Length: 513
Image 1: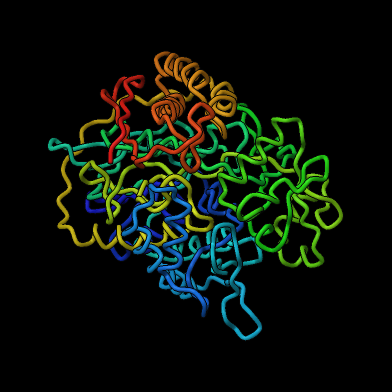
Image 2 (image 1 turned 90 degrees about the vertical axis):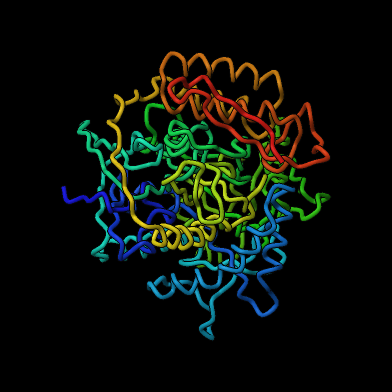
């Protein structure tokens, strides 16, 4: 294998990993992806679009204000302004790569509206196929870039440090168990989220927080792990059983938020529009809508999204196809919906250049906690965040003098979790949309026992989320405690690290300013 210690290793094949690899070129890059490039990345499932203040009535500072409002006190103002300011250039970069965004008859970019946005600023492609189109464009660009070597079908199992504690490589394995050690001048983790830890999720089942475990075991600080965003309108239908592993239910197809932006309405089984008296109604922040739907379902009322609009087939072809694949016709009947784990606001704590607390280790995309999303991500800010930080990370790495050390030998591989189905059911039941101390304590006890027994990454990440949720005795953004329904007077972040990286149960979480 042609791999030099001067190479930057990027782990992950979604928009964050692909954009970072492209921005790093012409530096040599090795891109490590668990599946064939462009497959199984959550990016490809993103229906909404990319938020960017491009309209004549819009400005980046207005975009930043909406971001801060949604973040419920934990979004950082400087980060929000910086990312919102970078959005127009990020769209220009994608256009330059050939991304076929949807346009108005006059040739300008078509802009959609989503929840908690004060302006129409959602750039989209193929109607509700933005993620797929962007992923295809970036994949083609990566395959055409001579500086990028792609290792498909390999998983990163361990970050390797040199004698000074700097990340100097990564140990990877393929499906047959072959092991390779990749020396590196820098490692960028871009492994996505953790929705696959929940039974009800819109994420690929491989999204189980592997990057968080990778970084935590290397000593990195994680931040705000308790903030999981539950998308309010996952379709309450059976997923494709062929896509479900033995670890539980298949992912749930998504009824994009853009439907509500274009007039779709929520009703319970009695025909009541239960969001009528809620500020923002169907376009309230996601956590508000998710809890409202959850309450209806808990009270025995099924919930539907009425999206019967005359042009739904042309404007939302992806949603129509998903519905029909599950025996529904959204043009003739409402869509049954329920909340499902969708996005993780927490992650590896990074600075403005994407640097983690471990020298030589950067993080990009959903796996990172940049300070943008706070307690509740604003719709369509996720792809934007990845695109913005990809450029800043690449510039930071390129500006460093390459001084790769000699990485220590890797540890034996960790086992895969034998309790995946149990963990997913437990997280749904006790660490989901509504939480309370008794359920969280019981979940932490069981997850700690599984972590002790199995030493796997799934139980470690699930335990860390649960411990952080237990210690946050308030309700804020995506974290709602039935026993503490009011936000605390002062908004504080939580930080989590492993007291002993070799002992999965040694999770330490504290609240910080």
